[in-house]
Length: 562
Image (cartoon, rainbow, N blue to C red; front, side, top):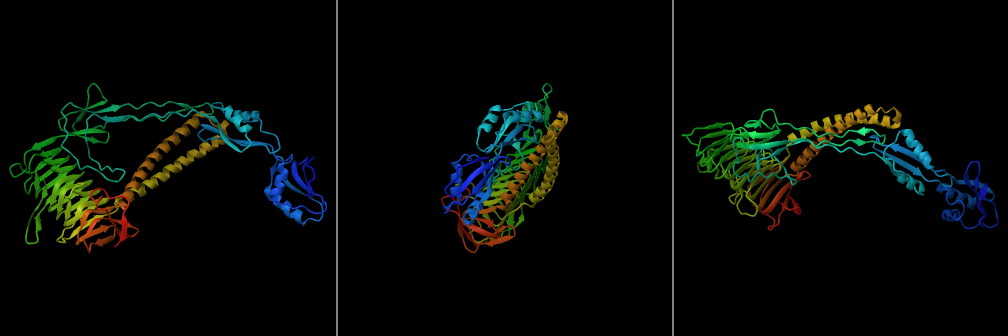
């Protein structure tokens, strides 16, 4: 039995040999000394027992018992402890961790014991003995990696690389700010027959890795991409199956799994002499489209002049250099013949008057939109930044994300309606995706249970079965990652829609009504430079500084409720 020198307090400390317990023993010595927990700790730190494990709760009991004692007593306050360790192998068998508790007065962990357990687990690759040595020298709790596998290097998917600059892409694309910009649509890009369109690049092969059991770990191989079986107006090169060429002259359009070429029909004007146009491809009209005419195209429609009380139906984008106008009669200028535009992409026009426009993406009008009904999936922007032109006067403008003009309404207080809000289709799509994601995550969980069993019983881990399980998990994880990316994009779009805005960069006039969701704001006074959004369940108006008014709405606004 080891014992420490008896203190003036009447206390001494000893280790009971058989139990290895550290005990305090009180022997009355006359007047008791002042004693507290910190004082006991100082006594022990200065003694031969400083390295032992001390029970702080027992020290508090010792002080209380000492202060009340009239007779001798003994109390257990700590113990000798040998060093301990545990080895954990990662479920993917790519790393091993050493969890180490240093000795507290007892025997240290033997390195040979650590290496023996690694051998028992079958760990033969990537053992880091320097890390083991450093952990064993430490006087602190340690949790270190002592074996590492070599991770496989995943391959890269093959790609279809466009060889045509500025090829048309007919799909809504949102920036980080939630703004889709197809305003500068430019002219129709065309290719000649035989011109190179797109090249297929082979996937880059991955490199196998090795787990800590010395087994090969297959990489995720890059996916082979292929051109779609049928691409209108395009054909594979006869001598090079990875090269796509134009089979006809026309407009190149990027589509999923390739590029097609739309025929391009060019005509001076559309009137009674030309008749209506129904064309499978892109239509370019150099001058005007006269009243009563119809142009229907599966691709883009571009008009160099004016659309007058006529109808356009386009699968792609529409650009009208002069603008779209309907005719009207009567003292109140009631429209009796409108221009109608429906497009699968975006519309860009200099002006729009007495027209109905439906765009699957966005609507851009450079100067004025008057007494028209405008509907866009993403946004409607009237006027360019840093200009005074850009008036939305009368009619109705509806978009999911944004309606912005230099001025909303008119000094004559003509009724003008602006509506922005949430796209309900996004919520339905997100709900369905979350159900699929839950199912995939459950399947991954089942594979994880199998891998956990292999971890607990590494000797039973048949390499072929482990490899199949890891591949199944990798495939499930890939599908989950794709679903998560889609979920994040849908969530971002929903967030953007829920933060939709109506902005008058310069002036909003009495007679303008703002609708956001199920809330309405009716302007009862003229307002300069103002933006509207939904806060909670109320429409709020945010005053913009005149300096920043012509540009996008600034992040910091002075906010007030109606």
